[in-house]
Length: 110
Image 1 (cartoon, helix red, strand yellow):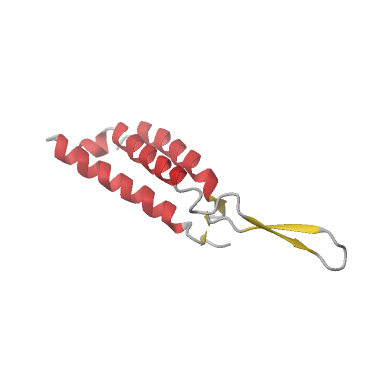
Image 2: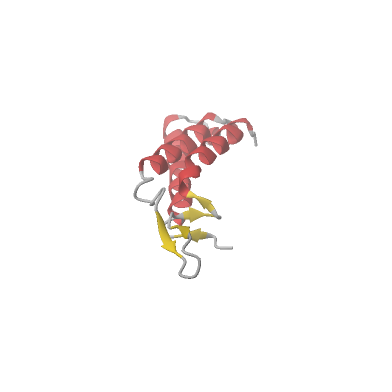
């Protein structure tokens, strides 16, 4: 199993970067140093921003891109997906997964 195909690894980098940015933003806005760890909404915001970013870049990731080949012996068409993926999951599904992770992590406490 491939960990990523094409530019799929950028989904993880985008999510990680958005979570780091929300951590830095909450540190600058609130005096409590552990605010990010003790509250769930900053993680939800970080995952939401990551989901919107991945959704906005879906055409760049090649969502829905496929190649149709015709088998010589049978004449049947075979569709091959050229869409980028992360952990075997096509990039078009990652915005929804990121939103789900945001909801889950918003309820997880330290």
